[in-house]
Image (cartoon, rainbow, N blue to C red; front, side, top):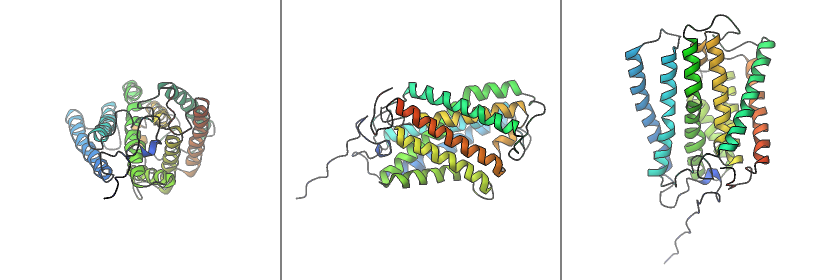
Length: 302
């Protein structure tokens, strides 16, 4: 009679983040079913939300009103509870481990990451404006504000952070841990989830090679930060700061529709973005080091 394999310890604070879906009670193959379940749930929720939005107000082609932006954000916010629910019920993961190895979001690091991300985003915006760097197709350096500028800014400030968190919980949360359950190589985990994140935003011809590189760069930085810091905090902060600054600026220049539906970007702008992402990654790793978050399983600063 063969001896049973020893169950893998997924106790908070004692396992690498990417290994947290290696739960003995659930077969590893369930992560594939889980990823598809979340995707289908998101699609159904999106249909319901968009149907309600269109029944209230249908935006002219190429434009996005505050209501359209709200509907878009809400459709992505649902990824947070969906990811948590599937990880808990299907994969039998202990509560909180989708957020970090500590068993929940670590609020102090999140605040520091957010501060660094906002500062870097604003500096990058100054560089783009002062240098008159060409923007993505349809975006503008100036001009009049959107007719519903105040409403768009309010929606952005209230919901874009959670929208960004929704994407992080699915791609850098559930998907990254799912890949970690299937592959032991951290490089494979980071590359695969980053490519999937980029492709989810569109593939050629729906997005240009330059825009693909732009989004892939962010995906790589965010994924590396997750595995190095043991949680989603840095990725959420960087993603949220990028989206908030982008859409506040878009509201002030009446280019919300262009920003949300962007399909192409000049290489000069992509270069600034890549440098911006790299700068945030370096800053986040420095902050994580100061807060003792860079070792696998560190539980401090909850």
